[in-house]
Length: 412
Length: 64
Ligand code: HEM
Ligand code: SF4
Image 1 (cartoon, each protein chain N blue to C red):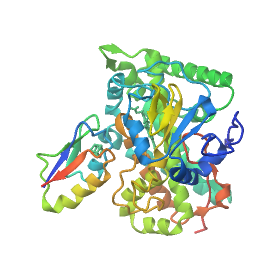
Image 2 (cartoon, rainbow over the protein chains, first blue to last red):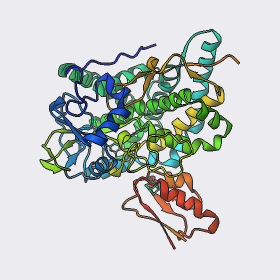
Image 3 (cartoon, rainbow over the protein chains, first blue to last red):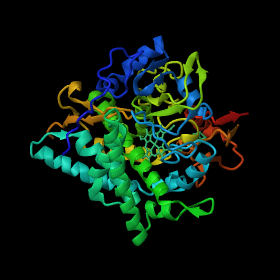
């Protein structure tokens, strides 16, 4: 089992969250709600010199404005790091997430059909079977008196397994994929040379999978991408690889974090857990509320041209973090924003983004999250944190969720 | 009452289709369309309001 190691920042520890923030400081995700709350009241668009200059808007209004403004903000790069990729707009290195209009629309359209609600609904049984087998293994550990962890033994396996099946990749390579995702999303403030080497490793792996599909085409998403046409031509291999990498990166840590955070909530709020077990009809609103309150994904943009944003002098090529999770907690937009209400009726949360880049995998993510929580509480109606909240290890970087979540299931 | 989806604003979050499948359908690209002419029968008004209250893009409107 891989034990989670938070990466270390080359910039050193943060001294002041309003003027020197670093979303890759291990203290950031652990204390994110408090940091955003404080900034919302004092400095709604914060700036830090780290990563060559980074802005952090924390209100729903500013996050929404940036998400809708594709003129002043480009998606050319969406992961804040020490290396600004040189792939130019409007395509970027991993379409459609790194693309701007007008190219974005065409690239996104290729991917929408396999991720439409009706296509995704077909995967429900497989997700359920997968959850059962993971829960069986957890139960066996519990019976043997071994400790169990809802992130390591459960949440982390679900999205990687589902996307590997969809892509037709070897299921036993799941550790390799999680490694890629870790390199891309979390090792963001290490040495630039190491980051470049890890990208080369990933490219080589993906090209080998594409070659394998060329030799043996099959009914899966990889063959679909190699076959689909854009402007009357098939996609070049490097674009197929880029899209696959995007699906791996966008689908794995994100959903794993959402499942983990939801289980974290239920492990630390016994009243909500009992209520949900007693009344499964609350599941729909509960899942959306977990997505709102513990939204895992902060995106980023690059400033496309010098301009003034709410009094902030933004300079071309500076980074802008786009914390949808902070927008979801803004009391100007949500009543009782700081309370988790599993029966919340009005919930226009932005966990899956706003505007043209709305999460393409949102139907899949919702399916995995719902089934994972349903099956977990059906198997373990009674569970709690094993230890204290300090024993929970949170991820580092733009994706926020528990990476180690020890749970205790009372003997039945 | 009538329900309307602004196709320019809809980004396919699919909240409406999940909450009120009697009123909304989705196309192959995951974008929402109203079923029929969008007339909401009295027993579905609450559902329609729920869809409005959960569309993150403010793409749905309910009119007399
Ligand atoms: C709970 C889990 C997830 C969350 C919270 C989430 C969140 C997001 C967000 C906020 C964006 C917007 C990006 C932006 O504005 O730049 C996005 C985009 C995207 N997501 Fe997800 N995501 C999740 C799961 C998935 C899954 C499972 C997949 C696919 C396997 C996926 C694929 C994508 C893709 C392809 C995009 C880019 C869409 C575009 O640029 O048009 N995501 N996601
Ligand atoms: S909830 Fe809104 S954005 Fe989502 S599909 Fe329905 S109308 Fe479109």
